[in-house]
Length: 342
Image 1 (cartoon, rainbow, N blue to C red):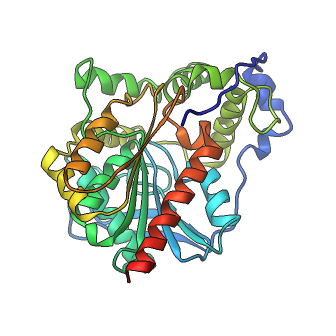
Image 2 (image 1 turned 90 degrees about the horizontal axis):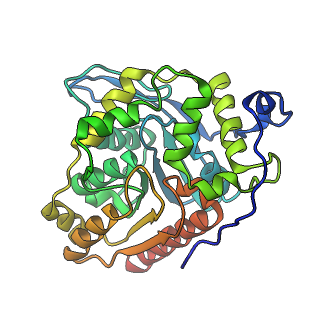
């Protein structure tokens, strides 16, 4: 099913105009979590103990674990928090958190971060909040978060009710050397003008057509203006990203490798898997998803695959309505099958 996109264009605002816009102060809505705090993980592991900042929204029986990507804070899930944890909080419970190295979580020095160690962080965080029953977790991971989700499903499949892998890879296939790839990513956060940083982020995360289209919420002239407004909001309200954390997370993504036999093991032990990608993804080319699907399918799981035509890396924003409905239908069906099988 193709994603419907608009071709209408509108003249964007300057950064100064966005900063003065009366709605920039409301660019990101905040909600009161059911639970929030710092969980101590990695006791006895390299770099530990590590404090992980987390929030839980909703009280429903379907437990969603949202794992964010490279250098992104938990608030990047705010659209999903609203949809699942606030508006449908009687059906869903949502866990959002800052991975080690990002947001309000610890930024430990270690020989290197790894997606397998970060998956252990997630397991221990879920233990901390009491989400430790068999087949309780519906895990959604994007980009680096999708790599962490793969490791979680491989190492603790007994805890996974469903697995959604968004805009991610079993192992990055580079058209340039890995160090150049990392340098390209580093450019997004290296000291430079704000306009240059935002331009780089826009190019990596979204399709050009969507950025120039009118704001989906009808507040700012373009979607690109809304993105800039949210970035200005984050700069004012959130802790400034630590370059050390970005670098170590980037290395974890660069070294991540889920071999075919390990993907098969996931397919043999996790019954519900959804893989989704945008065909205009500039960060992780959509062909990477084919490798994931082939490996998990070979293990015996009937993987659901969804391509969002003409959409970039941040599906959960650019294709918001379709994305939320897709995840809602998938996890609800998985939960219903689990109940019928008990």
